[in-house]
Figure 1 (cartoon, rainbow, N blue to C red):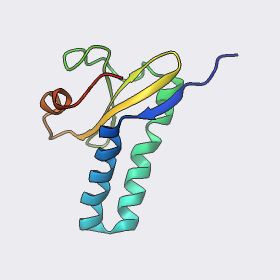
Figure 2: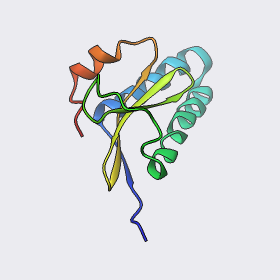
Figure 3: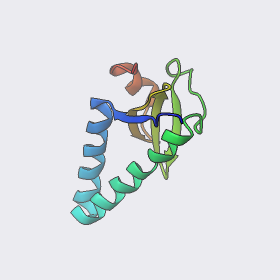
Figure 4: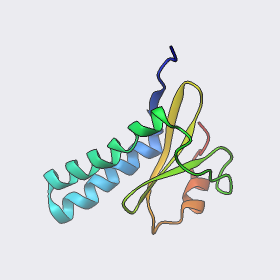
Length: 106
């Protein structure tokens, strides 16, 4: 039997989720923000089973893939053992610039 993949978020991805929570909380309250972030996080789970679900974005960084929740792009990489969520960015943001700022490697 295959060993299940582990989920790991980069520090940047964790910070992205905090920023998203704060943005939503300021406009709609803490409960709505928590619910929205949970919905984003629920999109991580299918990637553990089907890591090639999202299209490749080698134009941004080698081995990078993207999966979506509403207007948010979940940038990730995968290995045989884990799925690494690199960034969680709103579609209006400049992913090329932001992925170049931090370490987009696993």
